Length: 267
Image (cartoon, rainbow, N blue to C red; front, side, top):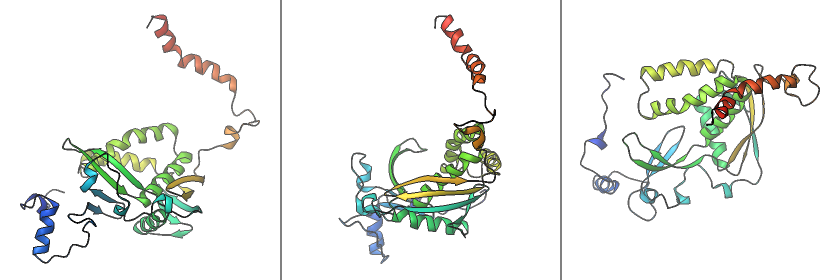
């Protein structure tokens, strides 16, 4: 936002490592309760309602597996409950408004899904990222609620979005994510993309049932008053003339025309 003063001590002081920061905090009597069990600096951790991220220490070696003790929000999938849990999510214009019939505010939705997903070991990520400044950096993330939301949202979109609209949205998602990640939230291009995305969500209404089990979330059922799924057309049984298989002949010939021309030219 123009005119906002950014206070960023890490860019201004002469403490160039986590070790020096810990030493300074100890000298100043500032309690640090996140020291690593082996001593020294903790992981670099940043948390918000959607996720918690971890960087530093042995994560700087891509060959090293993350320690189990590092994870804060999730149990290991191996130690998750042996019985799956089913959760219903209700959507209005692309947003979750209720869980298992209980209407909630957005922050309550995320908090509840973080709790449910964390219990089942869902949402652990180990990534090597391409940073905006040019380096590659490894980070581990826990986003149990976000993982459930993404899977459920894809589930309701699968029956409410037109095919080409869905493909266009998939094409634009990496661009949108990069703009947000790199700090261009207030840019005109992000605002333009937001208008398009909001338009795609006007009919993304309905409910999705997900199964949570041992680190995995899967969609098992979905329905919507705005569904584009027509079982009278999609059926393997008699469709009453809704679909004529013979129509495929001309369709295939036209779509293959450019390839026949390419072959005829000897390419």
